[in-house]
Length: 533
Image (cartoon, rainbow, N blue to C red; front, side, top):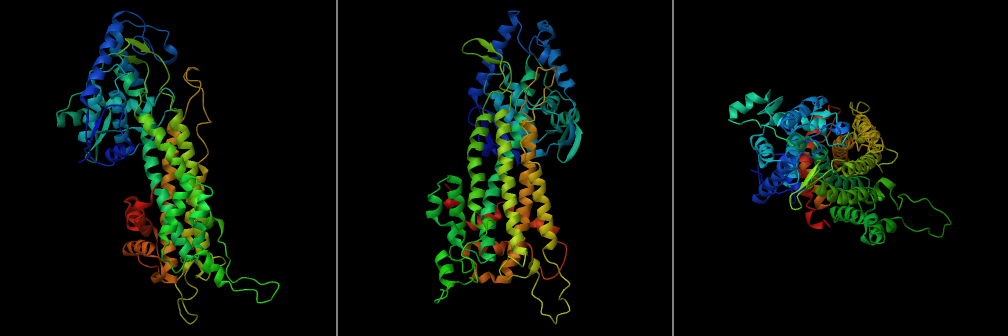
């Protein structure tokens, strides 16, 4: 069982990934976090007693901040705020996103600046432990005053309202609480606002998209190595000297990975061997080489494309680690100084910018793999492989002329790539003034993060098709001539999906390779862990 302790300061992206993708994770607040939350709540209580207006506690929300209420109405105000934001649309967020949201929101409250009791954060963690997951519609947040709409569905579950997923069933929250012996939260001043006024939903999507994008980077290097072998490529393009002269860390890592994967290959050869095989002019003034000494850009420049993704992820991870360990609601209480501060930490600009950059980088990698796939299937460019990687049939065979191999697969990959490219334009520049011009500049982080997740999923599917095509091509070349690492990958793919010996449906094969990729089986068998920066 996954076990994590939270304090609002040290939650890692790996922690979030592990909790999100497991059921019934055990997460608890540290003693220090409980003490910090208690001190913050006590300060809030003292400040309410002064009669001074406190935003969202004894005033209305947003442009209604100029309307003060008496303290005895504060709890009812919190409940009403949750109810009037329950207007989300679209499909429900995946379970793993909801788990990540619960964890991140609890961690933000555990930092101890939100003016809420420890019980509020602990109730979120209780839902995680029992895997009681609020049904949260994907759409409705502009990512500025926090993810108000989706997080209201989380808050609604805490007060025993709405619906949840539990043990594979959709049920009323109150019924599940009754079965499990759980109690709903009685809200007090600021509790509802602390639950919904933050970036946790956007951050949940973002963290999971970034985690999976790391896999895309590893798969892209693996795909490139296989394509280089299948196309009788020049592995000298990945020589350390070249990339040390343009020393972007992501580019150098990608080049080193591809070079390592190709060590020992008899198909993708060093530059010196390719030049040596070209022969000499023998006194002639001109000759056409039977083999170009340089590969096309989708092979030669693969580290330069995938390196951008790797470098982007390095700062995206830093930004997200800061975001999930931050107080992102408003107002914030400084227990040490005895003051309350109104600000805008709920504005998810860093999440939006990170996801806009990530989806561009991932979409470019999908496009790279689609271009490599075109070289593999096109008899004009695949250096002697069959058209569309069909099996080799003699002219006398009855099967000759009947098969189209990977023609449809390349069309599908192009469609997936086009979709990825189509949603990779930045969302963050499309700010819309809303809420009576109070939220007059918004981040649109949840849209950027959801799009990033979609682009990552599309890129994984392109990679799966590429891997199947490359393995088909290498069967036609002769797997015995592959490098030891790529041959191990080929063997694992072939154990799941056989060589295509005639036209047949291929969607099942795509799903099987996707499963291998998402379980990190392919990158593990390639054994590249020791070569990471």
